[in-house]
Image 1 (cartoon, rainbow, N blue to C red):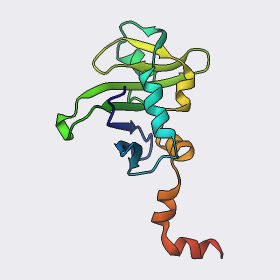
Image 2: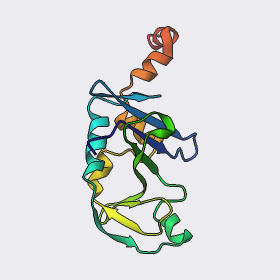
Image 3: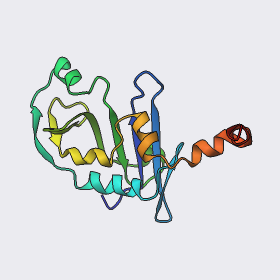
Image 4: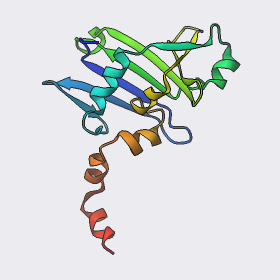
Length: 159
């Protein structure tokens, strides 16, 4: 995916509000918002998606119940990768949905509007966040929380 200019990671929040993290390639570096990702993680996410290959079929024609059982009701993560262009003009290079991660099978993956569900290598979960909590715990730089907490939080931390 050499022509990638932007990506979006839509995360299900479970009982809390979901999160959409957008990454844009600016002067050769990935900048993400509304929360910053730790250095190198956005680039690695795009790199891993560019080489993604299925390892097996989870279901060739999954119904609603089977999709729910595989973590697609709603999906744990929805990732869109865009090429060069502004707004609606930017072509969608890839759109993937991610479901459950199972230690012996891998990560459930599918393309929207298709009933086929694949297993991909579970190691991909190291590079694609599957929940808001996981994003904030493992992928976020922490700079956003510190900046939004302000001086009051710093003063209270010493009490």
